[in-house]
Amino acid sequence: MKAAILHGRENIRIEEIAPLPLKPGEVRLRIEAALTCGTDLKVFKRGYHAKMIVPPAVFGHELAGTISELGNGSSEFGWKIGDRVVVANSAPCGNCFHCGVGQENICDDLQFLNGAYAETIAVPARFVQKNMLRIKPETSFRDAALTEPLACVVQGVEDTKLQAGQNVLILGAGPIGLMFVALAKHLGCNVAVAGRRAVRLEAAKKLGADEIIDVTDGGNLVGKIRGATKTHFDAVIEAVGRPETWEAAVHLVRKGGKVNFFGGCPAGTTITLDTAFIHYSDLTLLASFHHTPRAIRLALEFIENGVVRAEDFVDGECALTKLPELFKSMTAGNHAIKTLIRVHE
Image (cartoon, rainbow, N blue to C red):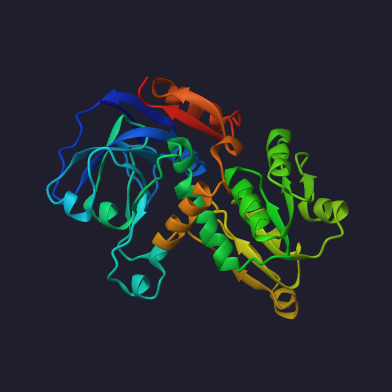
């Protein structure tokens, strides 16, 4: 089969590889939809991800597909050939301390799954048992493939405890920032978005954002946002992943508010915080990472209820054979919100 193999920094190759034989409890999926992701772009630029992928390795992690083969024992869990499913990119052990207290997102033995940019994928038994879900007949594979990134946003929304009537500022209008817009509006929040690129800000407006703040020109982020709005924000979501944006977020939330440092910054970076300001402003600072099985299931519910739809996020298509060129273009900043990869062309 054809598959995208990550060989290192900015080095993806489309290769013919033999599908892995199935182990007991595993299933093979025919991939029907695979989507690009900001994390994949970071991995492409860096050449690896310490937790998720070490090259050379099959690449990509947002997918939905059809079961095409069953390993010994997998049918005991009710799976059958032809089932339409979505599979998460991780599966917790269920036995460690963190799993025991409902924090499966930071499981001590969290396993990751890569290989969405391929014709098929072998799904390990732990994923089959814990984080592979059936999708309804009327749910498109393209919609279902959004489940994993949306689950991360669900985790962030629950961690921040967003509620109807709150004023929420989202820093960043990438796919994750836009998903925060969709869920926050669904909850009844008043949402402001600060971001770059007109097409993405227009997407935020389409998803219901009440205020749009264009920060394309750079400069003093705090000053620019404060100059553009008089809103006192109960919560600020940082969905950019830059140290300077983390620092700015703290100065954009109201006294007594919450900041979620959702965007992951480059390894080794640090920030400086004014301890007196944080203390006397009575701020809550938190950071959400990844997702739990509960968040995966809630995300699929949101998708199947029409709260989040691929038509609002997937605005590009690319053949698998052109994936290396696509990622080079993405590195240069020329890319869609999300791109559907046609793996069977």
